[in-house]
Image (cartoon, rainbow, N blue to C red; front, top):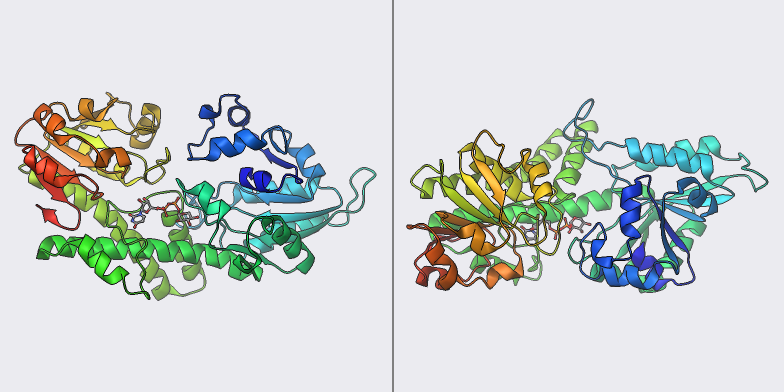
Length: 448
Ligand code: UDX
């Protein structure tokens, strides 16, 4: 919404939320305090806020005034009831649709921005059409058009992804509504990159894009394990296959498995949908992408224990990186969570350093405060040097650029010998680490 406001100064954009603290944070005069860390976002918000970008808790007023409403609410995986563990929880979509139905005035275009299961637009349409024709105040009768406009940005690169998208996808049935939304994006996106489809293709394309991307990561991680066993190097294999223009070079980086709020959730959703339509073999195929991902995370924790003479009980391990990828403070489904939990279960003592993730977030993710864990314990370190002090091993779990530049001549002497570096992101200067006396393991090539 900030980028739309930035690129369309003639459009008033109001972002509303019931959560007062969150809205207050978005209105904080100190742009470093925005609730989301995303490179470049502070500058965009700084340019538009108060001009044509507003953050407010006045949900009903904003809906009443809007020509177009984007539903951008959370759709997490259900934790109980029918479809638990796979289906998306649509309670917030339904609640928002009901609120739009109640508060809208005149004609309103309702845009599904949240990632949704296929045919959710039916639900949204059913709720809206129950209010169709009602007259709010002295206004015109209510009418609605529903569009699907999934978001393909990735965290950490959100601003460039939005400013120069590969494509914008708009699904719908009402040509006038489709063109109204296309004209918003048309302010800065070339027309040939604005794709128009039917509603269901649009909803399904989002799940499919994420499933294909995640599948590439599971594929390369499966080959990483085989590389470690055979003496091949996964980076060389990835480069060799990536130069085939049919395969392409992106999303072939082996690592500790994918994290983030989308991939696992969307694949599980796809699995649930396939099951719902009786396509059980298709469901099993996509389920295996998620299973391989969990396996990779457990595998890394297991091999750390094996290398440290089969036990990490009471040993100090430095964890560098907790975010699910670099350039974000987001930890949702971060591989570091599962790897740390496995190591805590083995009674390790973890010293965790991430340049952007606060201690309270780590505590929430690990389900225990820094000192209270029955098995093992963890604390948050304020620098890599503090984390590695007296440690038997250091694990790199997020590819922050600063980790590529670590000075192993300085860090290695702080550790207890024999000491290990486990580079799960293939980012560290391994020659320097070896020269400093560390034993080194790298994902997809094994012990070097
Ligand atoms: C993803 C999609 O890329 C985006 O299009 C969609 O809108 C939302 O989901 P995001 O989750 O922000 O975006 O990050 P992404 O860059 O896709 O990375 C996801 C995970 O895969 C991260 O944990 C990352 O470290 C991992 N990854 C990515 C790899 O392990 N190897 C790769 O080659 C690429």
